[in-house]
Length: 355
Image (tube, rainbow, N blue to C red; front, top):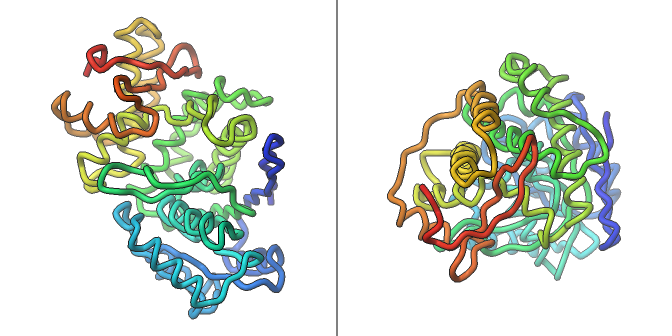
């Protein structure tokens, strides 16, 4: 088992992240040891429930099953989980355990941040995207008709338990969706200001086949690298006042695509990759990177065989981007590459945006 730790000194918040490849049946006892004799409920992805309910060993009366898909991250399910927690008489000393991908983690985390003004919650990510990104850092949210993650909070988990063996049964498309966030970390590594040289872009180029073959040890190393980079950013900027904005590389355009597509047909990771490709092109056109670096990044992306997404009318894309949390009344903020594994935030007036 590998143990990492988030330590947000400015807010005096810290919590452990456990990464292992032990049998999944060990997870229940690990969590039980962590929470002791306190009460809890489990919010779990429907797919994960069908595959692992026996191995996880949680009492069925404590389990709230959430249907899969981004559309489920809504106010209706938020209310249902609150009611479920109240029905089980959870107190502030008890816990909500989120078992699933980013949708489960975001939703259960938002419930936890508001239930009795804050209750413990534990992240158990089961997708590559959640293992490498969304389970760490405390962003919780639900979606609305106006856009993605517009209602939410910053609320850190009490612990994160990552078992790499969950990735063995992850469907191919969701696995590749997680790789969208993974390559993002490669492109922003130096801007994360991590105290280690992790060389994620090199790691990815050298391990394409091992990653696609789901080599458990390689995936464990990949997760550790991404989490270390995420921790480095979150420790310095918990609530996205400055540095943490770089984690949105590819997301301004990507979230706009998700909204236009009504969170259907293409996954979050696929839309993020489309956003990264847009950012590379935009950065090249505005003189922030040269063609050699643009090609280097596009070549790495091509090795993971992400699908091509449809093109949309400029006005439609810009209107969708205007609802982004980082947008202003007359500008849109983009995270753009500036050098090898470096990015910065830039504000552009609407008429300056090239699509």
